[in-house]
Length: 216
Image (cartoon, rainbow, N blue to C red; front, side):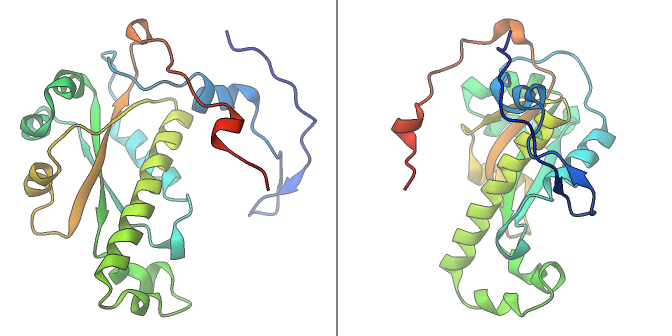
């Protein structure tokens, strides 16, 4: 059981709707999203409803990206037929657990994201920032698309789902199979569902504060 942690009482702060909110989430929420959450490798036979996937996207899309560019694209591989299309491109160690998951998300990034900036960042001509700059387009799409993939993990845990993010697949093959005729490239995969905690390994070590951070 997670030890109860004490911190100074929260200070009221206005949110975007003018209402007061606490400065920190309750400890149980932090436990669910971070402390007790684990990368899952086995899954219970419980469906993930389509409505929950819509709720997930509506939540994660609120996370910040540079100039609100929002380059991530999410393909929820859920049906048996879609999983069979994905299966040949999975590494051997990832194949069985991915096929057993209720949903496997392909997190991609759209190299044409800048075409949507007149809608997403309308108060200036942000699209022109990327004209003819292929390296800048790639770096912006990959960086911010990866950020949005992390938001997916956090949002999924907040909504009560477990996650199994992974590499270990043929990116080029996935791109041919699922993103042909687009400028979307796959980044990583993340299975979603309700994990079987009985088969979890002990949590791997983490760095201490002094090993990974400094305050200047």
